[in-house]
Length: 158
Image (cartoon, rainbow, N blue to C red):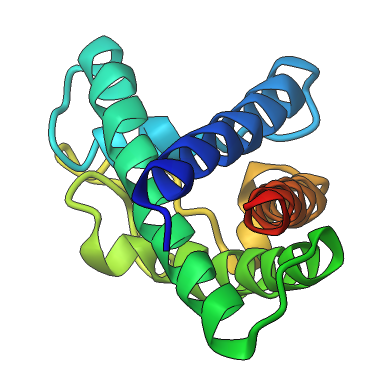
C-alpha cells in the first residue's frame, strides 16, 4: 500500500464529499453539516465547532480511506465502480444507522423521544437524516458514492 497515495486520495475524497454536502446545504437541499455535528460534540461554541468539526471530519476521511484501501487490496478490485459501490453501502449505513444513533452519543443533541434541554439543543437527525430535510438521504448517499468513486480512481491509478 502506498501511504502517500492513501493520504492524498483520502484527503481529496473527503474534501469532495464535504463540498458536495456543503453545496447542498447552501442550496437549501439539506440542513445537515457533518463538520458542525462533529464539532459540537467537542464545544458549544458554534463558530469554533465548525473549525474543529472540519478537522475531525478530515481525520475521519483518512480513517475511512484506509478502510476502503484495505478492502480494495483484500478483494483485489481497484476501480471507480467498485469504490462507488462501497460508497453507496457506506452512505446507506451513515443515513440509516449512524445518524439515528447520534442522539445517544452526542452531548448537545436532543433525543428522538425526549425534547431539547438547556444542554441538548441540537435537533436529532432522525432516520435517514430526514429531520434535516427530505433530500438529506440523497445528499448523504450521493456524496459518499462520490467519496468511494474518487478513492477507487486513486486505487486504480496506483
